[in-house]
Length: 427
Image 1 (cartoon, rainbow, N blue to C red):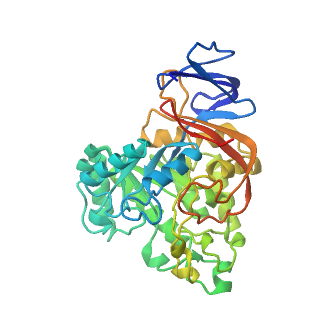
Image 2: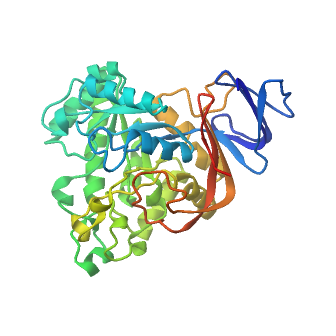
Image 3: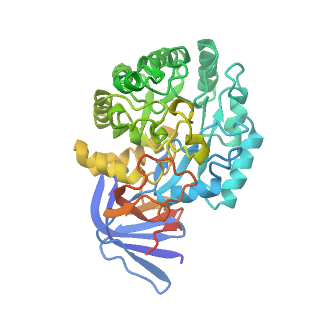
């Protein structure tokens, strides 16, 4: 159908400060009108959205699709199906694929696979160093020309701060965004849990919060020196929030995001020896969680991401420190965001901004809003619908989530990408 009218949903568009019950019309892949009782035509289709929320399609700043290179954990086809079911219409792919995203050829390969999966809105993040080895800079301009939205070294360490400085200078000269995952490897070592009571009780190698906050402090100094555009990804602790708050107060142009699970789970929630709670950065203290939530509310933290990392069964077997870190978290993004809004008193408009317009602003994208004439990237979800996390509802190839077999509230019913229906919940 060339014309689709979504009827009587609660339309929330943070970019316009819009929160109203109305109809929304999609025509030729774009948003054609928003208003009361829009007229249908002979060839139009109607979707009843009463009691549901219509918002811009979510923009996820960190989604690992595991392809190319690790298709036993997930594929672009499987994980974009999960993204569509999560209401995500645009996602960023970190550079730690195999091979890493360090050449235009790999960027083209991912674009081809995205087209085959009928999910073209995959934004690649180029590898800052060759093969992510941390010693030699890539040709960052060539990656930008190939279509990379930003550059990063992912979870891999850089050999020294001089390489980071040179990368920032290079990125600044070509107006490239640097995405930085803050970690000082000399302090984090082979740690797998927060340096706190849980790690002490069970004798686990630990990661102090200082491993993150010290790395952030160094990075912020270099960003001020070089003038590059900087985004800090997946912060996890109180001191990181404080340092970012100070940097923004004094005018440094830096943005940051937090993974949704860090806003809910702490070391106190971890089940001993259950590797589904093995994440990097680790789940930290209750105080850290509260600072993250407050930082999100006051604008210190700009966005929420899923930090989706699907794994095969074998990756999560064995002793806790020997398992691979990461959570498959796309489909829990909306339910956990709704829970955050209810628990922390953050308005739904502000919460959705962290998933739509704010990530769009960080990346310089025209999406993340429901303006007339914009591409119709739309998520429709029922905020009161409950669903059980199990094989019947889960679309990711990775089932590594601490929410497995739990009942969550809030479920996506329809997802449109550029006006094309890419997901509809089974009735």
